[in-house]
Length: 236
Length: 111
Image (cartoon, chains in turn brown, blue):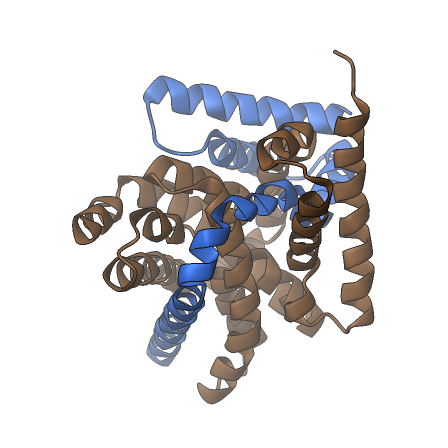
């Protein structure tokens, strides 16, 4: 196999744009509106349109980057393991609220969308909206949604969560950093976890925990739940 | 490299298991659970596993850029139902947050 200039430039461009976007994000005080992923994606879309690249070719060329999502998902076992002592202390409320939160996040979005937009692909892709991307894309494919649409939805969900959750929790008078992190991690996955680590280490650890747990629970529950069938019935 | 090999091996193991059982679950998630179980049994994270795992988690967000660019294929959908999408996501996020805080408040009062 020879590595074409086109393939190498697609990989280099993706990494380069991302690293620049990350610098911009740090300069702009980590506002969720300029999250490096959002900025990179829209920049790359613009560059592709200008250069006349089509997505299937780009997708093939950047398969190496996409491939790394597999080992990265497996690697999430390590922070999960390292937080075991924290988990044990609050095990029961954490498990219950994670289960309820994950189910509400998936069902409310998919059913609302089925009733409102009547678009079955969009509604099925919304099922995985609060789940960390590597797991979300697989769940979306299994449920009949579109993995690439889900990847975009997950990013939007992360930004929305980072904007709304801090105000919501203030209104609900939540002062505990552990709970703050857990809610942020469940609803806004990786985006929320990054924001939580800026608040405090405890907040970040619980956000990471919520993100991992939500991903694992959802992967087991959502594909075997009747949600996808309900969505299809509502949008028929 | 050994760390990366082990991560990929667990991914492979998970995928084989899922394929064999016919489960509609991503193989990488089963690999995650398998590695977690082994770490619990081993009572610690081996030193050689940390650098590759930390690097992958540190740049986790970069890894989903190629898939996210796929939104370009959904441009029409984004233009027609983009606002509805954001509104639905916001409502659903609020519902989940309120329910979770409610559960924490109830269980804390009980204990």
